[in-house]
Every structure is written in structure tokens, then in C-alpha cells.
Image 1: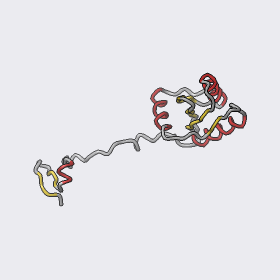
Image 2: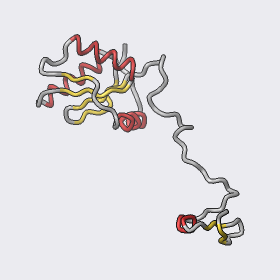
Image 3: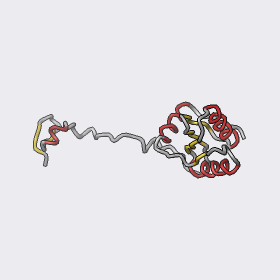
Length: 137
């Protein structure tokens, strides 16, 4: 199966979503074995976006492991910093990892409500539509 191609914007959103995640798979001194690949596959199926911690100090070896994981499991590389690898694979049967845009909107004040500064609100005062200050009831 061909690897996914994702946009830079989606990659940045996934990187932000992965910020709070902890590594779910640890690759030890034995490297990338079949058992580790199976475990990564299981976690990608369930979570779609995972972090992997790789032991070892050789950056080139970690990069090779990262490339091998992405190519063998049809996953998309998201981020590689130090010994932590972030990998994403979309699962069509599960909802997206990212929040919907409707959930990501800011609260909007009704146009009929005048803005009351924090200092006035703390003092128990409120602005009226005409701009006058009165006690908050």
C-alpha cells in the first residue's frame, strides 16, 4: 500500500495533538523486531497517532528505524526529535484524532450584550446598552 501524503497544515495539527501524548512503545537495544512492529501496528490501529521511544545514541540508526516503521506499516512520519518518534496512520473505521472545527471555536459575546471591563465586573458594576455604568443585579 502506498504511504499517505498529508499537508503541512495537517502535520502541524497532528504534531500539536501529539504534544500531550506519552510514548506507548519502547524500542530497546534489540532494535526493531517483528514483535515490536506488531505492537506498533496494534497501537496505530487503536490510537492512530502514537509516540515511540527508541533506545540508543546513534541518530542515523533511529532515522533508519523511523523510516522502516513508516514504510512497513503504511504510516506517516509526523515528528522526530531526539529519541521520540511520532507516527500517524489514519483508520477509516475510527473518528479522527483531531477535534472538529465546530468544537474548536471561541465563545462569542452576543451583540446585544455590552462589553463590561473586568475591573467594573469585579466591583459589581455593569455597563448598560447606552454605555452608562450601573450596579449589577
